[in-house]
Image (cartoon, rainbow, N blue to C red; front, side, top):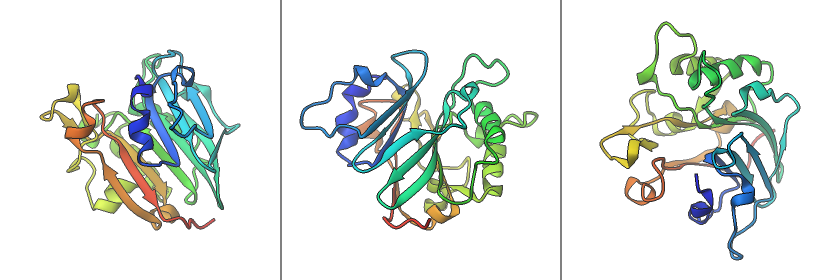
Length: 232
């Protein structure tokens, strides 16, 4: 929430794309005249103070895809166009309190099955707050984190963090959430999964520093950088 208080910190990293869960509506964001304006701003949610925001900068453009199913309101398929680059982005904030059968990772599980014909092993990104980790798997529920990872693996779509840093699901050395901003309550729940062709073009994957970022949020940013050339 209160993204307007954090936008300058994020823009200092010169992002092409920002995916912001728990984001206030863009109308509430007052940009300093020195800050770059987003080229495209998309927002989804029912609470003006807490939705899912996706912002592009520079030459990148965003467009909601026609396949969007509002039943999965926080798993949003977006067409992204940039300089010589086109790809599908599924922006995620796994949070739907209206679905009593599964509010969190189960939402992703259901959405993956709905969009499975559109999930390709090229030019595809799924990124955001998954609100999940293998450590919380419910063995008798199909829609758990490990099964989401397995489903994506079969599509040749892989976690950038785990691939780049050679980490195992559920044993991550770098948390992305510190519950109540407490260093002794760390969890890794934010992810960026990409298709195999984009994994090959990874330049860096960084997790924000606890001491710096927890002054502003209980989450720290997951920052993924690709080499400019992405095969089409």
